[in-house]
Structure formats: C-alpha cells, structure tokens
Length: 171
Image 1 (cartoon, one colour):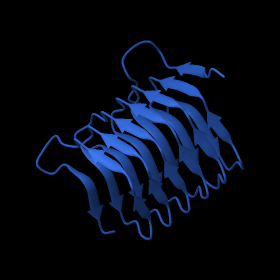
Image 2 (image 1 turned 180 degrees about the horizontal axis):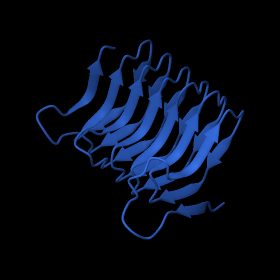
Image 3 (image 1 turned 90 degrees about the vertical axis):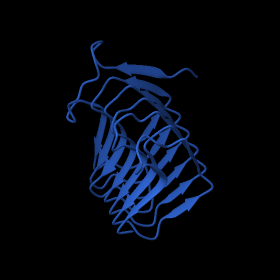
Image 4 (image 1 turned 135 degrees about the horizontal axis):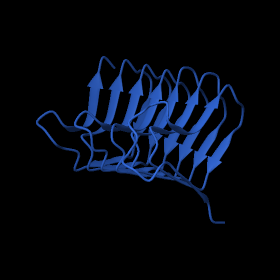
C-alpha cells in the first residue's frame, strides 16, 4: 500500500542533529517502512541495544543525515531505501555490528566530506547490492573490520582530488 509522509517545516533544511524524524532506542524488532521523509536533521536515528529491526522501502530526501544507527545496535537490516540530496551522510553505522545493508540507492549526498555509506568502528556487517551515485565517497570505513562489501556500484563519486568509491581509514 501507499506509505505515509513525514515532513519537517517547509523552510530550508534544518541543520540540527536533534531534529529527528524517527528516533528509536533499546527496542526489539521495530519496522520502519514505506515512509517519505524530508527536512529533518537526522531522518531515522536508531541507537543503543536496538536489535533485529528493519528499515525498508523508505524515500529519504533533503535532510542533514539520512539513516544513522549508533552506539550498539546489532542484527538490523536496511534494505531497499532511496536516499537523495541528504547533506552529510546518507547511511551511517557507528559502533554497530552484524547488520545487513542491501539494495539501497544513495545519490547526491552534498557535503564535501560526505559519504553515501559510512562505517565507523563497525564490525561484521554486510554491505551488498547497493548503488552510490554522485557523492564524494561511495563508502567510508574507519576503524572497521571484518565487514563484507560485495557487488555494490559506486559511480561518479567525486568533488575533489580525494574523492573515491571506497575510502579506508585504519580498517
């Protein structure tokens, strides 16, 4: 069926990381699906021991951050989302383990230090069958180990001489 819309104020993009569209903490088996979300600081913010959650088939456009999992979530899935024109990062895993990210389209992440996908201190995650088009970096891995990056298409990720499809830092 048709999803629902969640839209921030009609002004410019809000650059406040505490302005969240959906915020989840310490939950089990949450489903966030079929939403259109725009004009928030962080669109989908999942933290702490949130486990076995599913972010599926959402359209996330014109935000500061797209989907951010941080501080301990594990065994989660981010599948089939369309993220476009987000400013800093579109999909971030920070201190996240054993999650699966697949079949997402991330395009036009606009900040000069931005990544379509970011893993920071993230372990045993799978990033598979995604498309990152026209971002500075397709994927950035920092202090992250034992992750599987398979069959992704990172194209036209540029903006300065340091741009790349895959950027590794201490990983």
